[in-house]
Length: 221
Image (cartoon, rainbow, N blue to C red; front, top):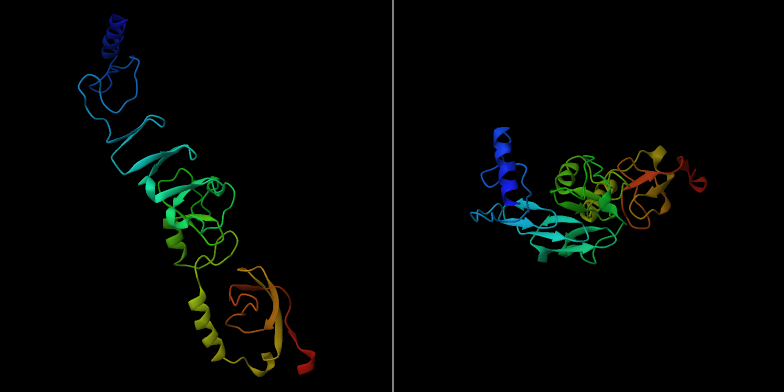
């Protein structure tokens, strides 16, 4: 058996198919972290399931994800409903969407589950790559999938309150109302029309969209 392996290795050299210095092509190999012959270390981290060799980055294998993740392991937990490893500070504090990690990032359209880029969980439960989330905030504040606010906008809404109060509408628009739909609470309400924004009466968000035509109150005409 050993002679056969040596002969196969010799034939491999003749064909110019020699592999690395530790083995010859054509031999049966057993993936492991070190060379059996010279004890050369192939990788500071080795996963016998994924057969992954890498530098030490505090990796760990997640059985539920089915792949290796960059750790350290104690900083992450696996959410069974989202089907993804998330940071411990999100445990019990994020909105779950079943198998959300099996969808592509809506910004770059690349896979999220197997990506080496950390996933960012929006308040609505949708996922983006962390880098895509940071780029998105340069252009807007809403989830590209459901239009829900992607971060806490309370402080900005209060600033907008002041701007609306300091910017009265022309007299022909002061009695005009409009039906709106709130992207944050999904509630509907009728509010006074204002060019700077229309505030939801339910959750006080300005992340709203007009849901009907403008009209002037009959009792104020």
